[in-house]
Amino acid sequence: MDRFDAMQAFTRVVEAGSFTRAAETLHLSKTSVTQLVQQLEARLRVKLLHRTTRKLSVTADGAAYYERAVRLLADLDDAETSLSSASSLPRGRLRVDVPSPLARMILVPALPAFHARYPDIQLDMGVSDRMVDVIGDNVDCVVRGGEITDPSLMARRVGDLRLGVYAAPGYLALAGTPAHPRELEDTHHRIVGFLWSRNGKTFPYAMRRDGERIDVQGRYVFSVDDGNAYLAAGLAGLGILWLPDYMAAPHRASGELVPLFEDWQLEPMPLYVAFAPNRHVSAKLRAFIEWVAGLMAQHAPVIVRPGPSG
Image 1 (cartoon, rainbow, N blue to C red):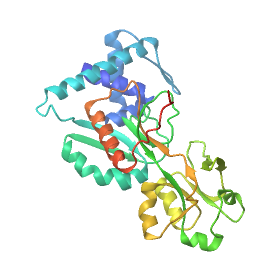
Image 2 (image 1 turned 45 degrees about the vertical axis):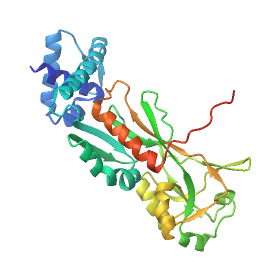
Image 3 (image 1 turned 60 degrees about the vertical axis):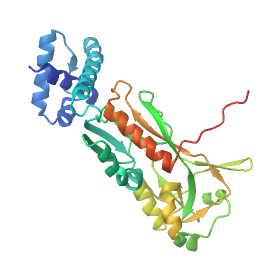
């Protein structure tokens, strides 16, 4: 038994929550992963996992061993990196998940410079706006807009997305141009719905002007959970959109989108890089986070709010 392979298999099973998913991420057969964990238990002479046909859980001994194993594997990764011939350059495979518009418009176009700087990082980028289980899906980090509400994650704020309200000229020609956000609640106006959560709900947008605040829910005939499709729906005239500046700018410049309610303010949407607290922040992960932070400093820098006086 290779102790390193067995330790890695065990930690991946714990993180993935199943032997099948762990085997997929390790590119091994389920039988191989099962045998490695069984051999590890035999060597340690303790039961690390409770296994039934429906459920897998970690024993008390398994939980204690997992915490130590994660640190040992992280230390080994650092040691190998520091002793490699390219010790100054992070290397290895990095799994990330990012929003689809951010990938298309900002991150992917900048990747040639990233790979020129970090040629030994193999980047596996999932592109979606869905909710991702960082641990269960074996992802090193996710980039997401909106506050991070999962208490099991660590997060670094890397940007603030300024928002505006827009509509296609074709939509306005049919429905008219609303003068006040309240008009979006009228029956002849509609928005494009964006599904933010796993339960399939849309959320209202808070808008402010001169001390007045209104939460706009709107009504929709089409909703979607992908940012690129959301933008396409607005361009097709299916409804009114709330968009970050970086998404709206080229279409505003071309006349494909018309800004609305420009005298109203919307709270900027924070952008975070989130990762599991027990997931070692390796050199390659630090490099990716700093790269994203640098890009967002150009496109949507974090807004520094004044602290309390006195």
